[in-house]
Length: 272
Length: 234
Image 1 (cartoon, one colour):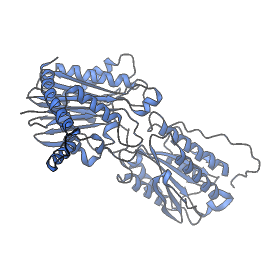
Image 2 (cartoon, each protein chain N blue to C red; image 1 turned 60 degrees about the vertical axis):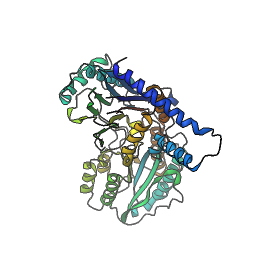
Image 3 (cartoon, rainbow over the protein chains, first blue to last red; image 1 turned 180 degrees about the horizontal axis):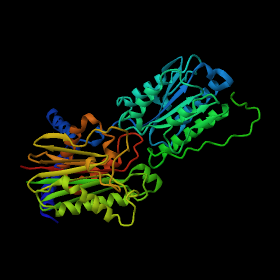
Image 4 (cartoon, rainbow over the protein chains, first blue to last red; image 1 turned 90 degrees about the horizontal axis):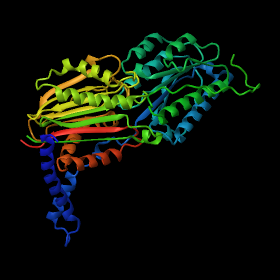
């Protein structure tokens, strides 16, 4: 034992014994405590501080943000209905998941006519009355990129202790605004660029090259949805991937992105 | 000049559930009337991260124990990496990747400390509290680590003097650091000092262990390690 250890033990043993006596003595007083004694006790309790009061009272969040095309073309062939149902399923599954080691938060940004925060980033279990998307207008995807970049850069909304967010871009057509500059800003942003990005192209008219560039998760190349069931399959894969992350050893790792196989249903028509 | 030093490392609920080992490691040892402390957090995704973290603490202790008084810390950092690579033996550096924080306090109260990767390095010198760790620019668990290449510019270092009672240095892994209220770090530091200075090292460690095991943040999952050295007398 080095000298410092020896010296420290001698000193702290004395202090500790003293502390034990003073802490324990008021525990069984012969008479009710006088105000003066009570003050001393309060002060001692205050001094016996616990580290718990410095811990953040909220779980670490894992944000899942969907950028959904809600332009007029999404109104065809049941796409928007399938998207609404798939979103609801995903949020419902997240909210019921009980093995979590993080709080899954869900946000939805839509771009149909204009880009807007349809559902602010909130804990999945507190989402109630999810307002259904309506398909209308043009496809301002660039404006949606701006919105999500601002959200990702906001440390109050997504703190540094959050797990790496997941962005999911869904579109069935070509952007109608200047998307390239906002997309570059998203990819260049020190903070926003670190999010995991997944993409789904719905139908044959989607801008697949752009969606391919958007996706940055090696485990999950762009997914092509040919029919309404495929939208559900994609969201099921997202759900599984995210819940696997939050229950696994390291929630920051990309979990394997496995899209469940299609079930045979001849009545399900392909998107035109 | 008298110091009190205390540390604890507890396995996180996630590793407990999975039957995995603690991927944090710590070292705390007296040295020439002063103290040496190190904490390391093996990257959760890597197969041998528990080994990497243990070896990092051992290497830090070995180097700091042998180092001369006027150690040029930044110039010595490549040695930490080099000896760590040797210490992990046949394991690949990628598989054993780990963060590392260490500190040395001499008998005269001279402090040298450094950090690579996540976690928190807090100091109070001359009564002035300071966070050495830079603000994180990304999200939780995206971190720099000891790996194949030495990353000189990713290290943070500090050199100062523990001149007053209550001065000290606290090192912790991100399992603790990420769940602390950022605005209350100075109060947290002070509370640690207040609590540890009333206990001997064994009782201090037991208290710290119970605090870390019974952590208040909901759904907390990570391993948690904290080491503190405080000056307790003039």
